[in-house]
Image (cartoon, rainbow, N blue to C red):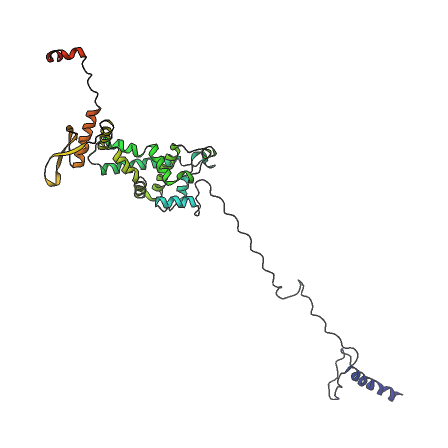
Length: 324
């Protein structure tokens, strides 16, 4: 019994391997470990353990977070210029001045009706621009018209810096479209005084940004057409011609009567004639200056009130009685 019982397990093991298709283990093979049974159903491999927070090792890669949407840029308030502001860029291009501090130009375009909470507007910079404009225009007239004294120079300067003249300049620069105004001014046509103040403030901004030379260059270029018109309209020759054509339908003629002095310092005498009558004569360091002097004298002579004509009964009296 004992021998028979000892042989069955071996045959049973061989029979089980044959049934399961497992090759027989050679006799020389090492014995199986005690933890693994020599027969029976094969165990399936256990799945890999999940990695929890208490497990060592790098965490799994996270999905990339979506990029945040860009924040909108804040709108520029009075006195703060945005580099991409098309109105400021267009105005700077028309002025032909590149602003190192564009906020000065934005402040110059801020009317008192649209000032911010700090009370900033273009009033102070307008005050400065008014002085700079007057200086540049006076300097230009002084150098360009050596033949004129204070009176004609003052009249020319007044014509150039008047409210109407500066309002025309503002129209050419389109300042009304770039200005920052209160609601009341935006509803209707802009007064000439507001436009003129904007021009002076812009000139003040150029002066603060680039100095006197930059302001002089911009002012003379912007006022170029008005400088030519003012020179012609305020000259005595133009005034005299306008008056004679209106009254007599005839233009005056200027004739050189003589010249004297060395070549480097000549003087000329010119007479102005209307038809066959000499109206007046004038002298000056150039023909133009002499013509201006003659025209001024002729205009003054035509402007003097005439003596009243004697009554008809007095015309028959002898001349010695009329002189009494």
